Amino acid sequence: MSITPENPGDLSRRTLLRRAAAAGLLVTPAAGLLSACAGSEPTKSDDSGAAKSKDNPFGLKDGSAVKVVIFNGGLGDQWAKEDKVLFNAKHANVTVNMSSTQKIKTEEQPKMATQPSDVVMNSGADMMDISTLVNEGAIEPLDDLLTAPAWDGEGTVADTLLPGTVADGTFQGKFYVVNVAYTVWGNWYNGALFSKEGWEPPKTFDDFFALAPKIKAKGMHPYVHDAVHGYYPRWALMATIWKSAGKQAVIDIDNLKENAWKADGILPALQAWEKMVKDKLLLPGKLDHTQSQQAWLDGKAAFIQVGTWLKNEMAATIPPGFELKLSDYWGLGASDKAPKDVFAGAGEGLVVPSKAPNKAAAKEFLRAVLSKPASAKFAELTKSLASTKGSGDNVQDTSLVTANELMKNAPKDLIKTKFWDFYADLDKESQNLSEELMAGRVTAQQFVDKMQAAADKVAKDSSIKKQTRTA
Image 1 (cartoon, rainbow, N blue to C red):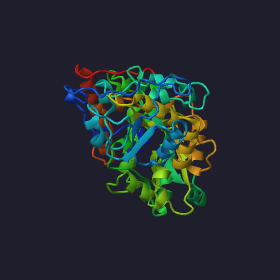
Image 2: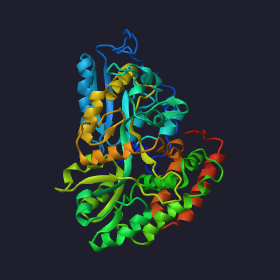
Image 3: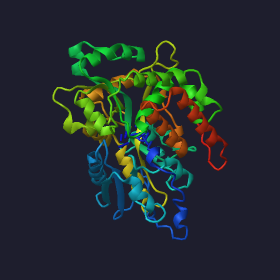
Image 4: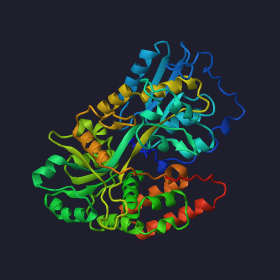
């Protein structure tokens, strides 16, 4: 996101943020979201009273209203306004009160215990910590949304979703987060420039290091990155770790397995990035996400790593003739255990607060968001895939085409890291250390040692509820 893409948490910017859902550096655990106002009366819901049917699976009442809050980041908010039109075409007598903001946690978290909005897009640098929301019961399980008929009448909602979308929104065995964007991450380059110079996009770090002198000879730095938000470089670091050390190594990290950060392949993956720093191949300066992206568009650097929200976020300043093309993250070469696995998944998460006044309308609105027409409009407007199958099939755009090609050639396993969604403190430490590594203030070995120590601390803390993954 996010996939936020500001953040895909988890694809959340970030959630995507992974654009998602991954802004731990600026997010502290939200203690007592619901207990803060324990003495208050729960808001009465107007969910009851309407007959349920295939076209109205949640019993939405005519004459009711639904409040929807959208994160207005890299993907903008026009897609959501189109969803409102689609929703009202079927439910003309239901009022949709929609607003947009970048201050999700600041504006929405204080309402969670009393009178929350009905649908909240939890994304960006000021997102609410998802593990806290789940652990405190602050958001509603949405498994009934998955089993509801698809808006278009073909199968269930779950049947229409791209691989990983349900898993990315599932915590402790229940589905809580509807990630609307399907983000693909990787290294972006200017296709027009590379064609002109006869350069081939690298597939490995050795390829990159071999190309770097040619790039520097043209007066450009080989690479630029967001040096302000730690989840940006962390995406790239974890992608390299997965490719080098393999899927099981990352599963072990997420599951807090003893000495998981010491597995074969992890240190060499981080040492490749350490070499990039030591060889002074990064554009200097503490640039944030949009500043680094603009520097890349201005020709100051040849590569930047980010998700597929990039074009929409920078649409106003893309130079004429600049061809945004996406290539896969680089591996280390023959030693890689998962060289072709792609970092992709659903992000930009929409949640329904557990005390939402109109849960029926909230779920019905989400059903509309995941429909084929809404998803096609999303891809058209954002130049990023939606989490519903086929969203980008009719969109002709270089950046989206290269992302589609990358996905078509991807193996079944997609790069996925969960610890940053599971544990807020571990998330924050990983972001801090990612910034430090890319600034040359810690070595790859120190990164591994510090992350292992942080993971051990979480593992030994009995007050922290543990989560696990198997795939």
